[in-house]
Amino acid sequence: MKKNFLIILLIIIIMPILAYAKNTDEQPANHIEYMNLAWWKKYNDEYLVNNLIKLYENNYDLKNAALKVKENEQAVKMQFASELPYLGLSGQLYRELRSSLQQFGESMQIPSYAQYNYYLPLTASYEIDIWGSNRLKTKSIKQNLEIIKQAERATYISLTSDFVTDYYNLIRADELLSIQNEIIKTQEEIVEKITDKHESGLCSVNEVLTEQRILTALKEERNRHIKTRDILIDSMRVYLSDSSADIIRSSYEDIIMLNNIPLKYSSDVIENRPDYKQEEANIKRIGFDVKVAKREFLPKFIIFGQIGLNAYHLDTLFNSASHMASAGILPSIDLFSGGKKIALLKLKKYEYEEALNNYQKTILNGIKDINSGLIEYKDAQENYKESTNRLNMQDKTYSLMKDKSKIGSASDLDVLYAKEAYLTVKKENVSNKINSLISTIGLYKAAGGIDLYSLNEDI
Image 1 (cartoon, one colour):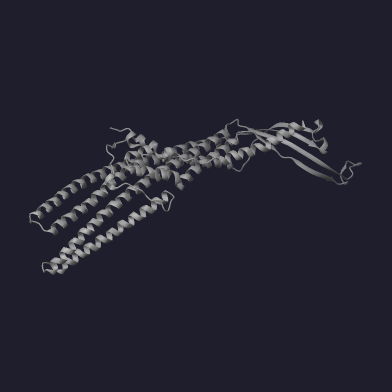
Image 2 (cartoon, helix red, strand yellow; image 1 turned 135 degrees about the horizontal axis):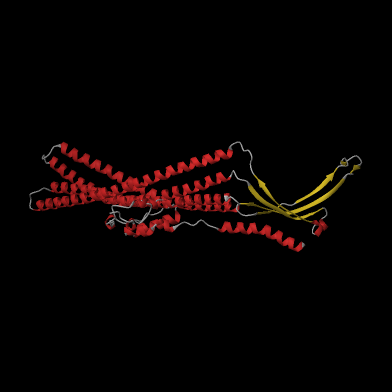
């Protein structure tokens, strides 16, 4: 008996230690599937995909989002534990000192004495979940976990979309800076030739000053492009959690546009959005809470029992006479709680109505975001198309001016002005092309991070 008791005691002590060791080995795992690399590969940019993989591996916001999920998984386990029986050991070892003043009746008096008491009971209890309250509480916590999971997915969609937007804005900044340097070089040639004309008496000093002011303004614009580029690089380094990272990127000429993206979608698209799934889970969660609040008015039944050892001498602790056991069932119901339970039930019902309103609002916002994304995409596509046509016409004008210069019907200044006009239109075309790409990112984000080509078109 003594041996068996020691074995049981060791098991009780060691099991929590093993459980703790197992939990400490668990590491939060990110979800690579949330990156949706298959979609980003459609942009045909190897550098973009490589940067996104670095983002997945290093970004602190993504790591914290994964930790939030792990935290709430433990909250589910904690709540589930309330559905299981409780088993505990709470022993007592004390020396009892009794005074001789103890007296029973008129003639019986107990003299002073002292004795040890060894009390080692295993206590077990279990709440019989007749009404399913504990199960409902666990379901509520699970829905909260689903909300956190969708929040993690939303973090992935938001971060990847913002990062890719910065990536293409950086490519735009590179190209605009390159074109701006070429415009400045052209303007410097114009200033030089206008200065020669002024020195030859062929133009006024005002023309020279006008061209010099234009040159100054062009250099100021170049400084803004440099500032934009540097800010974007610093921002992307924060995303990658590396303050010295070299942001490797494609050149503007290597960018490939996405074509044939559907322009109309079914309203079911919003069901892919994390905020929609969060509100859906929130309604279920509060629905469970309402049911729990109703069941709080019902009685509870707890089964309890003890088994263990109780002795006054250590050498008799494991004798059969020292064995003790008790068991029973404890029904309980609150007869008066000051209206607390009624207030809780009303509170949960109001929260449920609020959740329904938020759910409807989320649907409307989702439809609005998708429609806005479609409008932005269509507008960007049209602007890029028109600016490309305008660039082609300006290119022809520049070519004609060079041809006229060769036969002497146009001056070098005329050619430089035509070149400058062409480069200015080219800058606008570059911006429109990048805007068109970025609009696809905005539409992807509005659709809940789903491959736009896989969505059903609503004809």
